[in-house]
Image 1 (cartoon, rainbow, N blue to C red):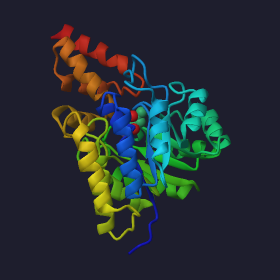
Image 2: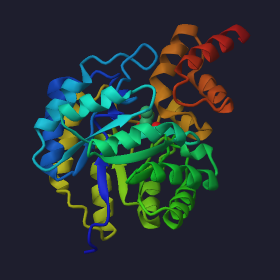
Image 3: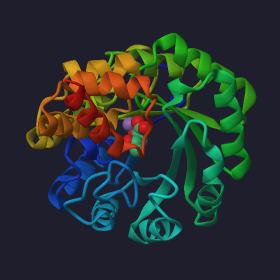
Image 4: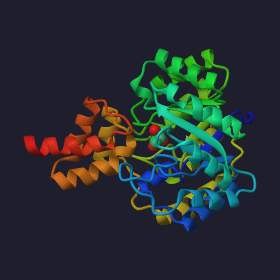
Length: 335
Ligand SMILES: C[C@H](O)CC(=O)C(=O)O
Ligand SMILES: [Mn+2]
């Protein structure tokens, strides 16, 4: 069996927060963290879906204090380490310092794919605090490969130890992933990661393409719990990678039990590719817009897909959640 050459990072307790309307309970976090740790997952992420400080009217209020959730998760870790996501401006330096006090050992500083330069201070702080520090390029489908290389070099120059290509919209096809990861492999010296969404049913194929092109960090979530149609499904990824000859270091039965016995009972709905999430993948819309779009469509009596197609045409990016309501209202007026 080929030696493990990558880390699987589970995002159930962060990307899944979008699908849970940011309402994870302390008990759900404790049980999920315990199960991930027992299965051998080395890193898993805990935060509001939009990262530290995300609890707000714009992004959705958290039902429970995220620092408390991070602490609960960290207390369950015998070998795993808790990661937090931070989008500069939504999360501030004090949020990261507090997360470290609560037990976080890794930070992923996320920016829109063309805006890596806003992350310099947060990446430097991550290193100062002794965290494993990662740069996370969201909506990577929106930039050509040369731009991604340029932005990844910025992250690396600020001190990032891993740079992620993030398919936030679930828009990419395997060849898009191969092209981007291969270009990064030739241009930067730090580790490379991939985070996928399943809106076009491509998350697993894209993840395999990423590993084969040289990614050394790959994300998944249990039962695919995440924004839009969810993420690459962690327990399936373990099985697929083992079938491909990799040693993942994760116990397949234990990770399946974590998914089916711990996560499934609290999922608000099955993680499916619906008409709306399919349109997100097709037109390149940020996956975390899904539930906001459903609320806006109901409020203005319009078709969710029309809102999403328009947002795709407008090239809306994360942080523009209020635009969803403007677009829905505009469609209602035109109808
Ligand atoms: C804040 C986003 O939900 C980060 C992420 O997981 C993505 O862009 O995808
Ligand atoms: Mn995501």
